[in-house]
Length: 283
Image 1 (cartoon, helix red, strand yellow):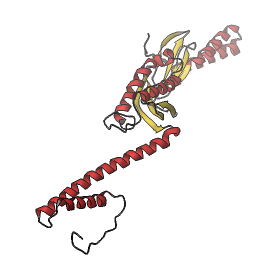
Image 2 (cartoon, helix red, strand yellow; image 1 turned 45 degrees about the vertical axis):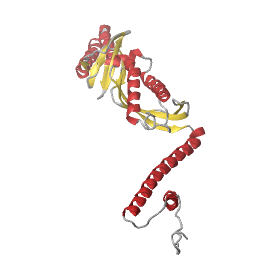
Image 3 (cartoon, helix red, strand yellow; image 1 turned 30 degrees about the vertical axis):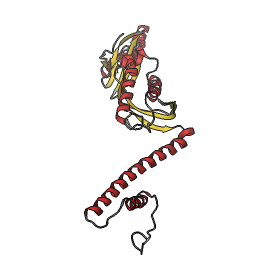
């Protein structure tokens, strides 16, 4: 396997002067001396003209002569090379690729929609030009394949365990796994992965409603758990304070009634209506 090698082309301005002088010499000979031999310098000058080309900043030109790779010119400016060289321009700029949302199944089989944002650039022009047929299309296809592989390794979400890494919760770890996967896939094409991350993530439309209700139910259960935990702590504190300061002496039956009332007040999802007892504690 070959690797990229630098090629230093001739300054285009120098060759432009030489071709111009050759062209003038040929015309002068044809007009002044009227000899057909001066046609050859004119034809030679015309043959040399296709050798001119420009290289813009952060760009490169891959040069090939009759199937033989000669090198890659990366210097900016106006240059000239053998007019029989085939020239292929390859940009070295960083590029963004925002993939389309694709429908795949996650680790547990739930259909989800996922898209990736990839920042990449060409590092090895030889590999980009000759190791793959079309390096831009190669990036698109491999990104799609990497996303499908990633979705199969993680669940979208896990309602039973908060410790398990999922697509929704493990942003850093999941994006790192995506970057490593893409880096290995695109290395063959001389592509350097600058950044890769999930740009879109959602349940597929056919289960989105059911999963939303499940998320809501899970949130309600978690909230109720916290409410009950806090209510038990407050009831325990109330009983301790009443007993500590000898405010009222409650038997076990009255304690149970008080606990029941306090739990209803503290755990209810609506405001309670107070009832004023004007009798004794037992009536």
